[in-house]
Length: 115
Image 1 (spheres, helix red, strand yellow):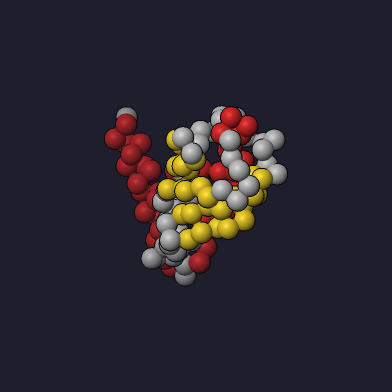
Image 2 (tube, rainbow, N blue to C red):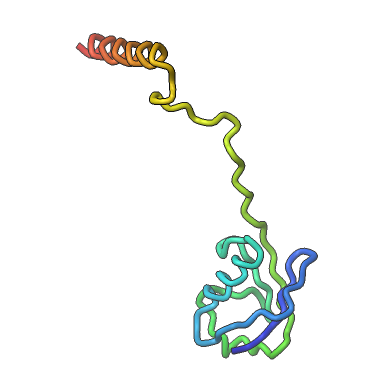
């Protein structure tokens, strides 16, 4: 295990552990949990270039306490729908009947059109 710090935007994560027996994608998933930036959007700068998903940790020559820089945009938080869905079962009986009648007519007019 190796501990590094990761700088992303204005934040610094001072003690991120890297399991060098695992591929770099596992490290990127750790950063996803910390930042919300999906691994496919992450650009992690190490000495000598960018960290590739299939890189060999030993060949990178990382040192304990080294600072890595990450660039990437976090996922947008999903917003609640403006209009909540209305289910047929929740409508008053009169509206249920009218809706079912419209559906019936639409299906039959489509069938007549196809014939």
